Each structure stands twice: as C-alpha cells, then as structure tokens.
Length: 115
Image 1 (cartoon, rainbow, N blue to C red):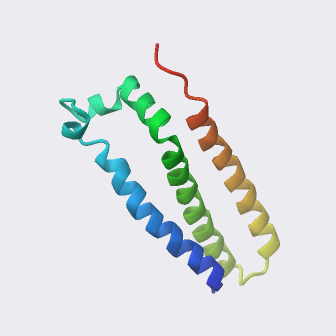
Image 2 (cartoon, one colour):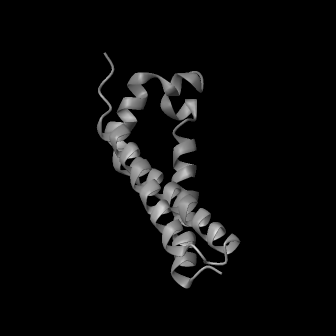
Image 3 (tube, rainbow, N blue to C red):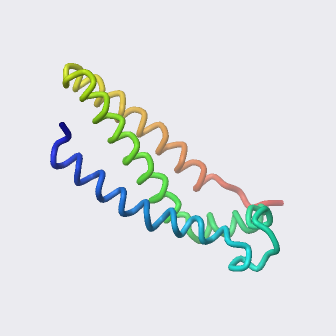
C-alpha cells in the first residue's frame, strides 16, 4: 500500500502533467505556430526557440513525468514483493530517476542553435 507521501507525489505530478501535457500539445498546433502543418512545428528553428524560451517548463514536464512514472513503478514493485526489497527497489528507482533527469537536463541545456 502506498504511503500518504507517495500518493501526494502522484497527485501533484498528475496535476502538473495534465497542464504541461496540454501546453506541450497546444504548441504543436500549426495555426498557433504560424505554419502549415504539424511537421513544420518540429522544424529545428521552432524547436530551438521553444527550448530556449520554455526550457524550464520542458524540464518541469520531464521531471514530472519521471517522478510520476518511477514513483508508480516503485509502488507496484513494492506491492509485488510485499515490501521485502524496499531499500533495494528504492535505491534502483532513485538511481534511474537521477540518470534520466540528467539526460533530460542535458537535452534541454545542451541543445545548440540550428545552423
């Protein structure tokens, strides 16, 4: 059974994801971006503009996805094992979160302008 802290984390990240996913999908609407098709919203110049303009929102989105997913996975694994490997499962989940959060950060921070 998930603790109150785990449930609160799931609820908070779920609410964040609803808003951030909606925002992320809305910025792919061609008419709002001044282009003719969905594929044009993925042009390097537009994507770089989004990263440089909304990088913090993209990172919050990525971190929310990771927290929500890994916290849910941890809860499922602990239920399957009856909490037997709590410390091991938690350590693995934390390590995975750190690795993927690092990769997400590198993607946003390390994106160079298109040539």
